[in-house]
Length: 408
Ligand code: UTP
Image 1: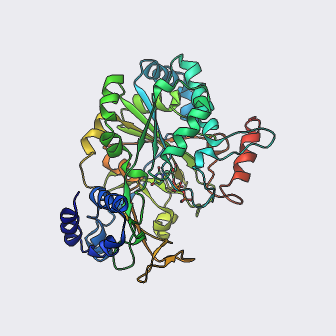
Image 2 (image 1 turned 90 degrees about the vertical axis):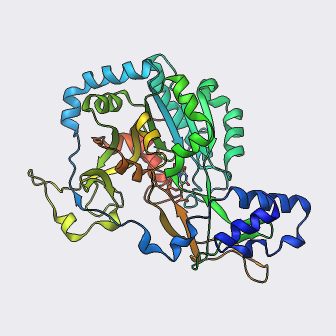
Image 3 (image 1 turned 135 degrees about the vertical axis):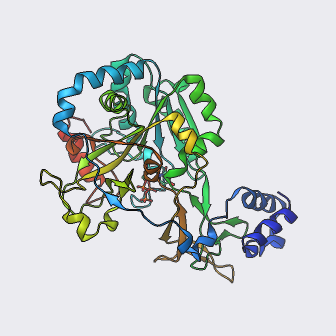
């Protein structure tokens, strides 16, 4: 993009201030800034002022899960169906590893975090080891797609190479970068991070399929004959990936998608719960739970919104292509955003000072015609690492790993 084009784009979105220091920059920095302006989607910044234009929530009603006793009863059928799909190469895995991991507070990408005590046990290693269980059972490698962001891509790829992909077949691993979104002040004006760089951050975990498309990976999905994609988070070190029983249950159910869920530990647990929204599958966030929703009971007297999602979803590939260009909910999140102030001095705020824009993978569930909530035991499959200590932390994940016989 040249200067004139950049000026026009910025004018369109009311962001002309981003060229404030352009005259002071070196040629190289000028080119980088223009390129960044060219590739950054600024179309969402007006929603800071026009929030009422963002779609609201529909009518929430309960959606029952397939619970453990039923899964146990039909396990062999599900396993057979799922394994056949994995063996036929129809199941791919997508690791969402583009997040910033700010709560954990490590400078390196989260996948490089070492949870070992007597030896190295990196988060990525745990995930690959879990995937290898299925690879060994099926006798074939599961295609693995790893989403990174501009902020952690090179480090993540280098780490995997140094670690020799933890024994995984590197020909079955593809990396792709997610898009970045601008960060703004409370008036929707995009911050400058440096004189020649606008403040951006990864655009949430919901844009993964669009980013796969931009990276040319939909062709790979077709070439590989992949029909289902199992999307999962980087931080759950007990995660079962491409789990044949889950895959088989979703296929046998005839649903367009599946979501692994755990029974809520307590009513107010901070997890999103599976539900129907205007008759379609959806997820109601813990902070959206009204007293009525909390009080609702099933015919068996159980809480009606009792199954929390753990960011492990199965989507039918052709359905993802279908929804790719549909409007997708936008989340405007208040954050601390380092930036240059009006005098060009760098500020690292200690409290929120503006907004980031994110799309979330959980919103994709609502775009599917149907979804199978599939119950798993949290002690076996849910050990998220969000924080260094306390709830959902390195400490709690280590305890759960030990209980599952994993040496650390
Ligand atoms: P989180 O919501 O825990 O966010 O991500 P985070 O960025 O990793 O951590 P904090 O909030 O800064 O502490 C859940 C999953 O979604 C991925 C993360 O890597 C993790 O696997 N994610 C999140 C992305 O891939 N991209 C994003 O933009 C955000």
